[in-house]
Length: 269
Image (tube, rainbow, N blue to C red):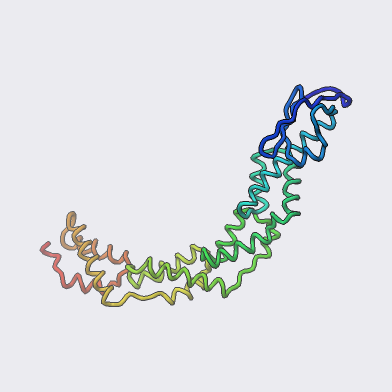
């Protein structure tokens, strides 16, 4: 940074333009400014610029560059105030410059945590199919102002529709899971996505059950696989215990398993 008293002047030797930015060439430094900054100071080659004015040009150039960066961010997708502030911190440690950029972006409507929260809730319910607990958690992670977050309201009807929509995914995912275990898995999956336990239980009543014929067929397949696997190491009662335990863990009913084991022989294996 140049030194000297406030009355010292510096000659603007040359102005180089590139991509809507001007590089101001002085005898001891170069300053890159935007078109707006260039126009504000009525700059031209040969102009004598004082220390105070050059400092202002330099500071305005930094602020203009930081604002352009912030504007570029919010022009591509939505951000919370916190997210933009954190990205600006990576560019400068000047808290006042960051405050000015944030303020300007807010004034122009590019940053609005209330609007961001509203849009996020709509997408979370209609597209992501997640519940209130998860929505609140995600918004907290994004740094939504706690005062704004207090205004979070979820339409119970829309949340239930989201849970039911995700249940369609679970019906497909758990098609090979025994009926006894299917609801438990569905309830846990819904809770993990942020729906409360009562809603998860209610919605899971609509799970499509596997027909008894299909379940018996699948049990038979899993039974034979388990017996073949454990027979490599165990015999007799110990083999039977391992097979039964494996099938119980998969969620099959004990009475159905017992029926298969009684039809089979273990004592002579």
